[in-house]
Structures are given as structure tokens and as C-alpha cells.
Image 1 (spheres, rainbow, N blue to C red):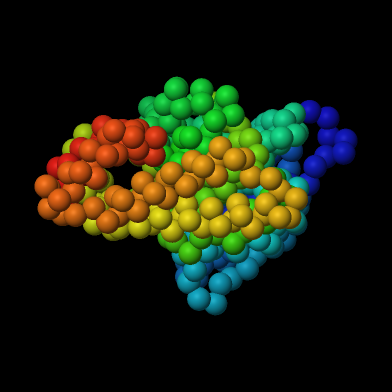
Image 2 (cartoon, rainbow, N blue to C red):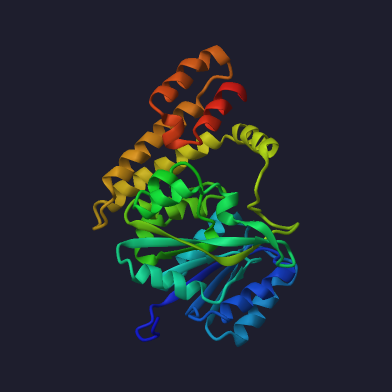
Length: 331
């Protein structure tokens, strides 16, 4: 890629007690073949020297560094919203505090977006490593169950059909156009949804691309806020129970209702939501409401379960047979 007329690039980063993982991540930004124009960091109340390390980095970084310290704890979603909202670049990248980016990550993903003007976002794969950066033998798409068939759907421009079911884009692998900020800002008032929200909301008004190469080393260690790892059958069973316990279907109702409202809002401001995604969103809201209200009595919930089998709701909006089994046997 030529560096003439280089588009402006921002990195939106959040930190909280980043410890020894911060320096390698920051260094990987410096080593990019296409360096960012700015790094916007919002710290969520670190007490371990993270703030001091960020300010020291800002003094020598070959790009602008803006460090903000939250007076009260915002947690992940609100903190990323704050960081993203302060970015000035044409393209915005999300960054966690403990990964390492490959040197051609920014250049590759910006190049992909520039070659596809109708695309609003792109995300890559990532290599999962241990705290010493030793590969663990699988990648992020494996851990997120992003199957070859789903990858094919995204390449065909049908990504929303995948994103409506589950998260497949780790935020730290995502890049998107800031011109869609009226679509994605503000984020829903929900915990831990920033990556899913950005991917789905942007898919509602533009194409979303994928890049199968691993462009980050995703570090798993004992202090991860979130750790994307592969789960065996027993662990999947436990996760399915946990999903019911924490009210995940109510979360879905709020998430997709917010998306539907946002699509209505931007439709009058020159951005045209995809009709197919709006219809998909309506279907997901209906499915989530039914599952959120499902009775704990087996016989009372059976008609609803059968209805979702007959209209293939479990397959269009969930994990298919796994979601069916969850409603039949785990409530």
C-alpha cells in the first residue's frame, strides 16, 4: 500500500491494572508498518502504575497519545464507548491492554476497507497464546465457534445472519469507519457488549468483511477480564446453565431493541439500514422475548419450544439443537 494520502487511523484502548502486559502491546503499535495517528486510552481506575506507564509512553511515542482517567469505574462497555467517542480518525481500531499486534495489522485492515468502499467494518482472526506468547494450538475463530459455513455467509454479504446468533468478532481484531458513529454511538446500557454491538449495528447499514489471517496474538493469562478459550462439552453445559441464570435473553431483548431503535433513528439522517437486517432484528427480538419469558414448568413451556422448532427460530437466532436442548432440559 502506498503511504500517499494515508487515511487517518485511531486506536481506542481501555486499561485497568494492565501490569506487565501493557508495554508489549504499546510497542506493537509503534512497530506497525502503518502507524496510527493517535492512541486514545481511557483508564478505569488503575492502581498499579498503568497510568504512569501510559504517560511515559506518550512522551516518546511517534504519534499522539491521549490518556484519560475515569473518576468513577465505568467497566468494559462504557469505557470502550468513551474511548471510541474521543477518536478523531477515519478508521478506528479497538485494542485490549494485554495482546500483541502483528506489524502489518493496521495496514492490512485499512487496505481491506479502502478496497471495499461499501464496507463499514472488518475483523481478523487471532492466534491464542499463553502469557509467554506461546501458541496454544487454536485461534480466536475456533474459540468463538465461527464456522467455515458462517465465514462463507459473511463473505457473501450475509454477516448479520451470523452476528444475530452469537459473537464472532473479538473487539481487539476489529476496525471500522468512524462515519457510522451515529449508528453505533451511544452503546447499549449493557455489560460486555461493545464488540457484538459494533459488529451488528454497523452490519445493519453496511457490509462487514473478514480477514482470515491471524493479525494479533491474543494472550491468555490469570488476570484476563475476559478470556476467549475453547470449552469442552462439560464446560459448554455449565455455560448454558449460566446463561439462564444471568438473564441472557433479557440482555438480548435490550440489545436488539436498541439496534432496532437506532436503525429507525438513522434512517432519517441519510443512512439507509438494510431492510433484511431490520427484519432479522425484529425476528430476533420476538425470539428473545419468548425465551426470556419461558416457564420453568416443562409442560407449560413445551408449546413455545415446539413453536420455535417449527418456525426454525432456534436455528435462525440461536445455536440450533443446543439452544433447543437448553430450553427443554436446563430450565
